[in-house]
Image 1 (cartoon, rainbow, N blue to C red):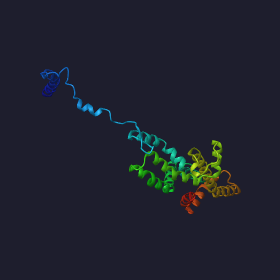
Image 2 (cartoon, rainbow, N blue to C red; image 1 turned 45 degrees about the vertical axis):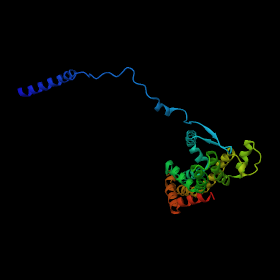
Image 3 (cartoon, one colour; image 1 turned 60 degrees about the vertical axis):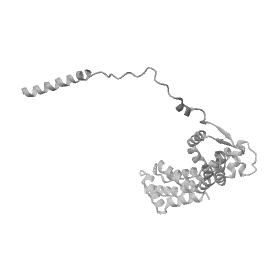
Image 4 (tube, rainbow, N blue to C red; image 1 turned 180 degrees about the vertical axis):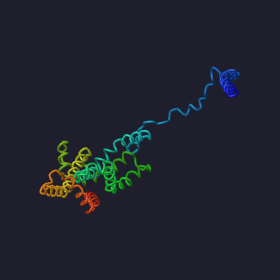
Amino acid sequence: MTRAWRRLRAGLLLCLCLPALALAQPADTSPPPPANPPALTAEPLALAGPGLPAVTVVESADGGETYTLTLQLLIALTLLTMLPAVVLLTTAFTRIIVVLGLLRHALGTGQTPSNQVLLGLALMLAAFVMRPVLDQIHSEAWQPYSEGRMSAGDAVQTALVPLRGFMLAQTRESSLQSLAEIAGDGPYAGPEAVPLTVLVPAFVLSELTTAFQIGFMLFIPFVVIDLVVASVLMSMGMMMLSPMLVSLPMKIMLFVLVDGWALLVGSLAESFR
């Protein structure tokens, strides 16, 4: 017991002496740094001289304008923030997502499939439908621009041509005429004379009208099943039993037996031709 106590006391003394030993080390005798450090040479500073164009617009020989890379990146990042609105308003996405939402309500499955599944399916179907337009934009606008054979403004105008053609093909004449009257524009000389401020909302209205027509056709068989089930339950005196509990599995079974998903996707793709 005495030997253990001595070892413990020696360890405590050693711990107390370590800070003192550290303070007792000789101080650093190296000369202090000079008060006025030598000035840097002017050679590295020459790199920061003028000659780095940040935001510059250069007029070309044919009267066009060429933007610097910094300004092009700024425009590209600004357009990326508008990409969801462009996808929603100028492609087949609107019609597809509305039809899928109406189908879910007709089945009465609540939140199944989930919104994420419907959005992903609608986005992939929209890319499938828009594939010819995207291929044309890639070959006629993006490739010449990436190879330096076309300016950014000309590439945008070239890319709008197939997109405008797709929207005009799916836009109802009544919707286009109504929007033109609201905007106060007169009759247009041709399809290429229709401004995007009139064409885009007319296209969206036409897509909503078509989507609701397809949704009405989807509702009819499921409403018939609901009516038949409700009538059978009432005739059997089972008024306390909800018809939805009986009609829901029957609607799901009918939809699966007729391969409803394949029929719906095929019908949606054919509706854009």
